[in-house]
Length: 312
Image (tube, rainbow, N blue to C red; front, side, top):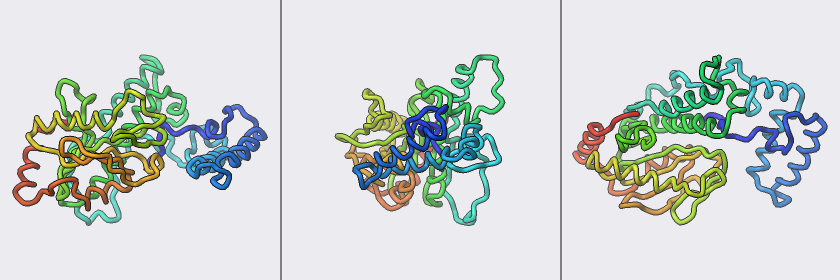
């Protein structure tokens, strides 16, 4: 899984500026350790972030590597484009295992939006040698980084869905309303023995919790209603394809929720979930969201979805 472009810098985690001296960094690190340690009333997730931040900038060598863009999340790599550039498919160790049938280009629409807005921010006509250079991405406005984070979230989820197995079909980046284009798309539609699922992949850069069947968190605007929006898009696609979704899920990175799977309720007969990405395959593979499909029903639903699906 990729490091999020929305992840706070190690300097922000430690509460100092990038120009802080090494002595300032050490003092800030010790202070944050005391503040966040679970034994003193802190939170384990924040404590881990502090330790990770120190790994990134705690020594002159690590700090120089991070500041130059040659390292992220405490790791070095010879490729300056990683970890956010589109990756080429690579052979898998278990490539003999049948995989789900997949359609569409996950993350592609978001990457187009990212590149367009990045160019606008840098300046029309300006040359960008590497739009995924870590130092460039880190300095970009939040709106720009959020577009890239959305693309990566989709791509990471698509990898999980492709491994569901031969009994599943996955459509990525599907229009729900032709008049809205990509702005109204469903990130993933999944069909299998557990039902027909509508899935959104999200990364808000901070923790997520739930309240009355909806998602809330520091990175979610007060007017934003992610599950309501997914349900609305699903309803529009249902009218186009003449099908009914049995499950709706919003997928987030594992470290953004303390619970693997949260059942939020139901919308028009579809059970709604918040799920960590590493728990998604188990949820879809083993837990029917509604009346399970089989035989002729499954074939008929697949035909209708395939006929109605238009990709962005």
